[in-house]
Image 1 (cartoon, one colour):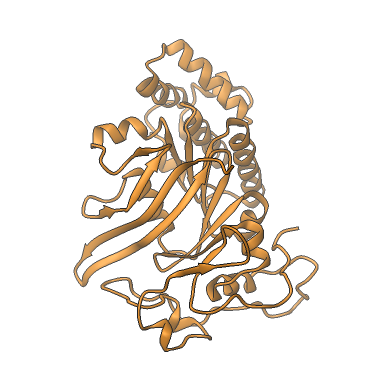
Image 2 (image 1 turned 135 degrees about the vertical axis):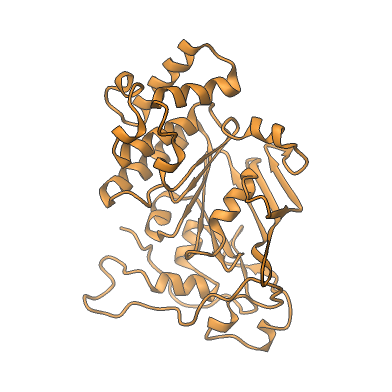
Amino acid sequence: MAAAPILEVESLNVAIPVPAGTLHPVQEVGFRVTRGHTLAIVGESGCGKSLTSLALMNLLPPRAARTAGRLALDGQDLLGLSEREMADIRGNRMSMIFQEPMTSLNPAYTVGDQLVEAERRHRRTSVTAARDRAVWLLEKVGMTGAGERLRQYPHQLSGGLRQRVMIAMALMCDPDLIIADEPTTALDVTIQAQILHLLADLQREFETGLILITHDLGVVARLCDRVAVMYAGQIVEEGTARQIFRTPAHPYTRGLLDCIPIPGKTRRGAHLGTIPGIVPSLVGSMPGCHFADRCPHASGACRSGPIAFRDGAGPGHRYRCVLSLPSGPARPDPAP
């Protein structure tokens, strides 16, 4: 029997009024996240990944409107909650790790004050118990001298250490779900790998559902269970990591994978793939396939109306396209 999802999202939409009309950056997005597993949401900049995560946490800009057919955390409907009720869930049952920790941590308070506040806001524990848990979690995320770190301010830490503090803060209340929005963007390559593997290890240890928002397909191949590929506000393909990398079905997914050099397969000096054209404007309505103007296989059927999902290479694999699943040899993963 399949495990019950910790997060269920169906027909999630975000609309933002702009001078030219109404912007629709998130359109009919749906997915599920299971406890102890990782879902990656991938796509190029501006495709709607971060706004999707903000919509899940109800942290959208004031003018933005969120609608959904279903949005539930462990069976609890999130759509009908008041702001106060949602605030009780954020940081408690749902936590978020943002791209830049220096803008997420308060520079006027010590690391210890901020970790303790996160625990006491939701659990009403004593200061001593909260500090003990903060020290334990800082040690868990690989920070030496954790007790001393509690007295430091964010500016006294390196970028990698600040991100470890953010991970510890996300785990303070033992949440059911963590959303990590490009958590390694501001870090150098060696620290990126450490942080990502740390996230994966902690997620398995704490049996937490994890949504990893990224544009790095190599990271996805190594660390994630399921993948949702986004383009121009829509999920265009979803499946297991193996299905997405070995038998990609949507032309956009195949285009992304063609842009990545494969160790041992791509010849030195060989040209990598490209996706011609530009992302369409999401102001107003777009009745057909959002990728049609950039797709080499586009036909009249692609522009005549909404494109429904069709089954892919196996259970749980689906893609939004009028084309049948392409045939050919399985692709290798873009990571050793």
